[in-house]
Image (cartoon, rainbow, N blue to C red; front, top):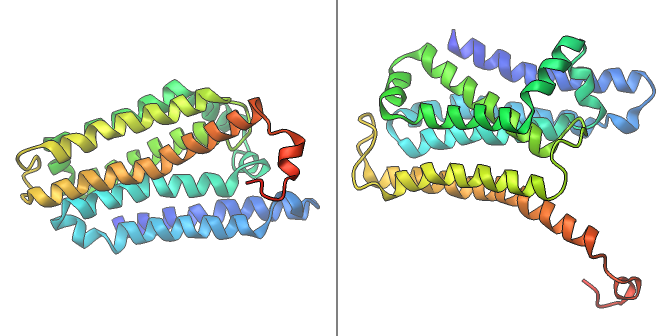
Length: 250
């Protein structure tokens, strides 16, 4: 039953963007709906399926593989999906006004951060972590909350509907706040002198799990903070026209 749910969710990740692309192209706007967006959604669906199938068995015995699984479904998949539907496509994913109103509420920066932080903190409490490992339905719910929380915070950071949720330096600060929050858990795993989870008794593997989390979050959250900061600096301090035309200009 769980395998069927994984496949259905992966199919929806591809089907919904595909439907939006087809609708816009039928309306004569292929410029707003390139097929590359469908390809990106297909990559997201493939990562989702791979994380929850290929990594499922090693995640039962290695905390590092379980952490990698969570990072893929809670961070990389939401990032890829939102990149796939950014712009007019995202509007066609929410056809009803009720869905649009609910989405506007959930993607408020404070609400999104709270959902993400609660999911990250609660599920890494050792007792709950082990309970999820022992209960298939609870484990699926855990994965769902990681995906949902990641989807919300990346919706704030990427702003696919272009609503100006966090302009400029506020986006940089938001990304760094997320990075610092994730770093707390990563440091707890790395600096602990004993295994924290009864199901995983390998301290070195626990260190690797913490390092994986910190490196992945630095690449994604740190990356968007760096790109946004660079854009803001260039906007406020544009290069002189003469420097831009210089043959050695970088």
